[in-house]
Image (cartoon, rainbow, N blue to C red; front, side):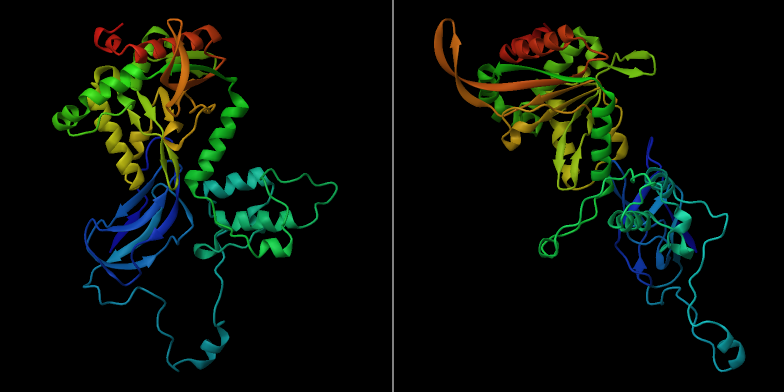
Length: 412
């Protein structure tokens, strides 16, 4: 018999939620065949079968929260036609008195010293609801995260006593019956919950401010148009704008190291390396894979890396370590048509650049009005780390480099 356990999920990731099992108990499995999908607060990963055989008991059911190293299920030896290791067959009429004395079905209670899942403890602390008073639906009657959330909803719908503080978890007022019948309730994924929590934490802790500028994209677009075919033929990837923006940001970060720094207690950590996160939208939420050491990569290397990240992000195949360690982030709302926005920091980073839609606008050039392809840029930054002068200067450096791409070649 081989145990299936939650693998190490990466730095700072201690638990996951069972998304779905790909196999049912009793079905044959091959070695390395995907068995179960785990949702973490960063990515969704698949756990492969450690050996071939028959999937036996499934310990952790869909929707349950499990810690690293927790038992998920077991694989037994067999050809696949064997039945799952289910409950034993009912006893024959050997001891009718004893059979009558035993209850037909009993609900197991968790051991009194059984530890609670970290998510259960956290929700209990935030909401004030004692997990000991919640009926558990997990293995051996253990309380799951879903049980706690259901208890919170139930408590929210009941009148709150005058002397009892309201729960810290945000709840909504119930809709009228006519509206409720036309609503659909879908549980938030762990990724979406984490996005919501981290973005709110940033607003609560950072002194966030945004400064704007605009860039004339004429020269970059001309360069891209001139070389896009030969670039793709040689490097096997399309020539987009992200390579130019990433290299322009790296040059500006070198000149203004505070934009590449972060707070650690009462210290400032200045990073002499340039790991740029690139925001990628997926159907499950926003993820930010990191292109490492961008100062040593060519534009073609950056474009290849970003293209690979985008495909694997949409397929749910990003690795956790590919989304950690970023020092600065770029997000491109322009691909969705955004003309201007104020991006939120990607903690613990101190700055994020927002790109936007390229739009032809009349601008004054050498005293004449001309139509130029313009893009608004937004730099959101933590004012605790970065002064206004540094933020504005950073954005001006990016603008100057993009309007004169020769600076990238000459390292100016």
